Image 1 (cartoon, rainbow, N blue to C red):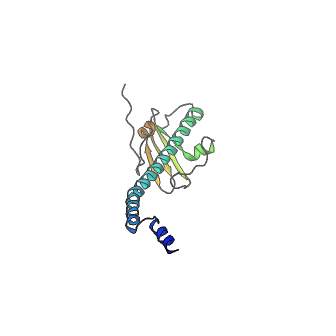
Image 2 (cartoon, rainbow, N blue to C red):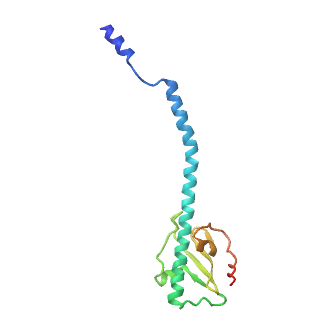
Image 3 (spheres, rainbow, N blue to C red):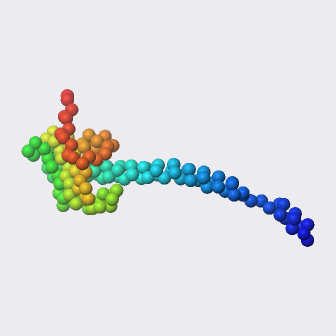
Length: 155
């Protein structure tokens, strides 16, 4: 019987403590590299979703000007369209800022007299501005102060 037990002990297989520690160290290094990268990806996706919300507000304002104002941007050197006007006329539903889930309480879309988009302002927990050229390109970031007028393209 003891011979059988000795034979079984020799055939035992498993990991040594050093092998287990090596695996734990490797997993720790991978986690130390991956966690900041994942956080950065999530932050950028929040910024992009907020930007796309500004783009949707611009699109709604453009439809509003076309249908309600007959495409006329020339009200005192430009045209401001409030988000409330867009909601009241049915061009925009009640929306939340995707990054924080906060309700958009106010804001406006500012067009210049020539119809060029100057900026989109969104007021939720904070005020964010998105410059017209960034909205038109489809990429950009918010700023905390109102962007100046967009230069008109020369012909």
